Length: 298
Ligand code: GLN
Figure 1 (cartoon, protein in one colour):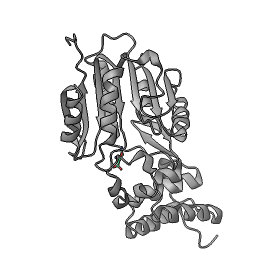
Figure 2 (cartoon, rainbow, N blue to C red; figure 1 turned 90 degrees about the horizontal axis):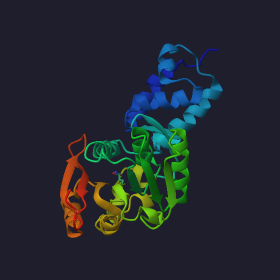
Figure 3 (spheres, rainbow, N blue to C red; figure 1 turned 90 degrees about the vertical axis):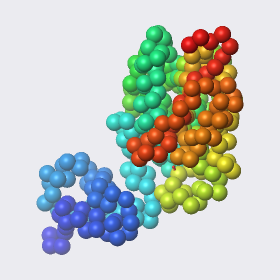
């Protein structure tokens, strides 16, 4: 039929249009959305670049393209994303996984495989699981690990359970609905080897200044760290001291300007060996600390 565009043509015009509208990674974005609409992988799009797009396919593609240009995140339009090389479902009321958070997973794995390698059945806890990316990724990497994750959002817990099943780790990862430590089983008290969290850390009055994708489409519950962005670090520091065991480690994601403050908060609660690690963009992103308990020699 005359007038129909091919895969190649449609990707080219859409990528240009996205670029004009200031959409990030315009070509990849056009390809991912077209993949979704016509049921071909990105590789298949290249192989079938002369295939014509039907009017019906074009209508559904245009709908998604308009929503993306208006600031709706690609991940929400696709309903899925990749994190630490694994597929994760996403949904609008739960924070979209960020690539920087992969570094947190790497540090958790290092910590559980290096210094604590003698522990037969290590236990990790994640506070504020969101879509479950950290809990699921560390469980998938360390087959003997038992993981417990908590979140105050029921949607986050349900989504995390879906993602644990999707990645085959639901037998070793349990998700609990409630605020921070509150829903954890009592048997874990003083018995946790690793505590990890990517808590909300944006200053309340800075949320509206973030990109539309974040300010409008990410849940503020997962972003808002209070007036100075540090509310959750105070709460976590206090609880962590009780819940970690004698050689327990704490690994936290932080905002790029919060390294010093978070180290000070942790040190004031009795943590030691605090260190700040940078992400792949050279920004401070992680704080790691050891617990300091009486009679602890290691
Ligand atoms: N890293 C996220 C952002 O910059 C914030 C996530 C969080 O508050 N933990 O939007």
